[in-house]
Image (cartoon, rainbow, N blue to C red; front, side, top):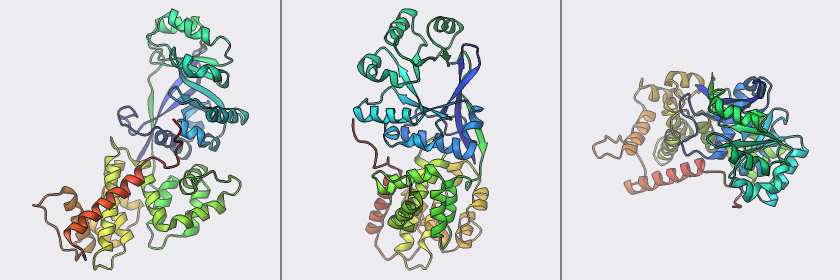
Length: 415
């Protein structure tokens, strides 16, 4: 499997690189645009890969990494998980400015974090940002296509700001000469370079979510190991505790709270939460549909096993269903997926098509049901319920999938 991050350099007046903006990329061709992805998930994905796969300092050659933080992530104190010397917190132009947000930004500044406003323009400047303009260390201004008079008007409103001004979307030499003659000291745009896509081949179990997924696949997952994987990764611990405990947690006592959270959730709840996060992180396809379908198939196979006369473990059915599509989700081969993620012999044989057994019958049934064709063959899996109840179970599995892939319930609801 490959991990991807977009990267675009930011230059100073001497044409030296002064930092890099890190951007979400799902694969080497598809970025965030047009995917309809949640902004929180994109930022989390960028930071998870930047920290756990690439290393931020390696990506930026030790220079600052400009990373867009949504309002939810700012309010959730997500930036505190990272070294203030390595990142610059970019505040999006569409953010709702409230007293609570101003308090969060002030707290970040006191803790040594640098803030960037992305992007100041003639509309939002007057509407909402003038009151906090001195909170920012960098202010981005979209200069591409704007004339000198309009830019001078924008700069006039920023004349008392202490921030460095960054001209973005500089696309021609003439535009660069114009913005250089004004008060801009940082520059970014196609005139210098287009964003590149950095990739790295990684194993499925190289990240914390992958290690958790592999541990939970075992017939008897180790409770202590699950807790240790979570608590030793600050980002995973934060996301897990915010998901479970909802309210603010005590950062001074993470291990005890992780154990409490795992106990509350239980191994089944932990399996479902981890699987959804793992599928989101490893998804390199053009949409979330395949990842959601993999989770849904796994859940459906699990429920079919649970409501039949078989003695098969339902958890293995769940993982078999998920892994049956994981090669397409990750862009890997099924052989390589199964080399890393160990299923029971029967479940693996069913996936590889080397043996007709009970697992393969449940998988065939689930696939036939997905295709919803009367012409499809439905094997006898000795269900203890009628067709109508199967339909209800499938609907329940769809609801479970929607819940697992939905936005975090703890997001700030203030407009």
